[in-house]
Length: 419
Image (cartoon, rainbow, N blue to C red; front, side, top):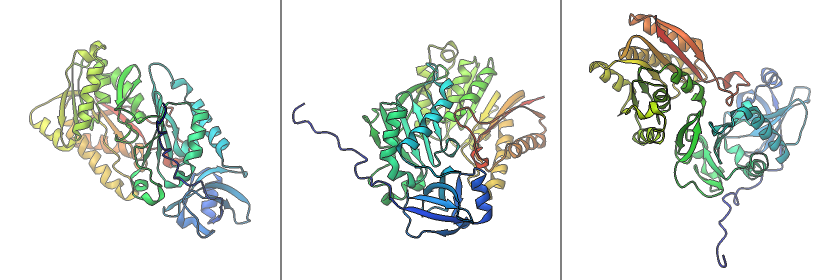
């Protein structure tokens, strides 16, 4: 239309990556780790680095004989100083490099892309060779979440690579809290900005295993939904028939909705967020064409999960299947002991409402908390409570959340039934 204004490019103020290549040398143990495939270089392992490096500069890592080891993104303000992009032999890090990585990640997930499932993770950071970067798909909307401002100068190149490798209608940009707290490195960008297409008019709809969901990709947790629990939600559905189900730390009610479709006799959900619970109700309304969902009205409770479990027990509430999926409880190694105590307490509280012979599902999303430690904490707490839980299944990462290094393994879900 004559006289209409072209919207400003939100990436117009982002400067290109610096042309400098920083020379970095490491301690012997760090050299071995990088050579063995580890994607992180910490500041304390660096013996030499070219001074004056900026976030997003390329750091070229050499061994003690000055031979090339790897190249990665430099972040001078983070203890995780270099995120390794490529190792073994020198190679150009450019738009074509990014396209190759994106196409390889998409190929790994090709089997997930069906009309029944239109949301999944396309890039799982370090595990797909793009450290500090997560890319999730919700139908025609892509959500790019950055965990380091070192990627910001590369955003124009990333946007072009995404347009070529993974066509989409909309690209929403998200930042982790640490990056968002460094606005001087974001060049006017903000968490939730739309950098391709029109901003979403509201929650973005998608399907997961035939169920309708909505994701708040601008303000929601992570990128708007917890895509990593897809397979575990389906596993809960498979054992829900005829059971009274309680979903604790429910967020938007994914486990509860699957349980309802699976024929649960009754469904209750507990979460601290009123907006999340409102979305939970909306998810049930969107799926009334499934007979199991139409047959139940979810009992939705807002409040602290620990207090809610204690209150439900005091009221004599009883459930045949209890799902407990808390947020990460051990983000640092020093928090592991406290996290294990919290899981023991959650187990005791959950058993207070679990019917004899019932099933407890306990999930952890902390990489520092091993699956064995989680299982031990749960089963020991059950024994102290005089309940004999038997582990029936232990699951890990789904296809779209691959694990390529030890710290990349964070998800564990324990299924245990009373014998």
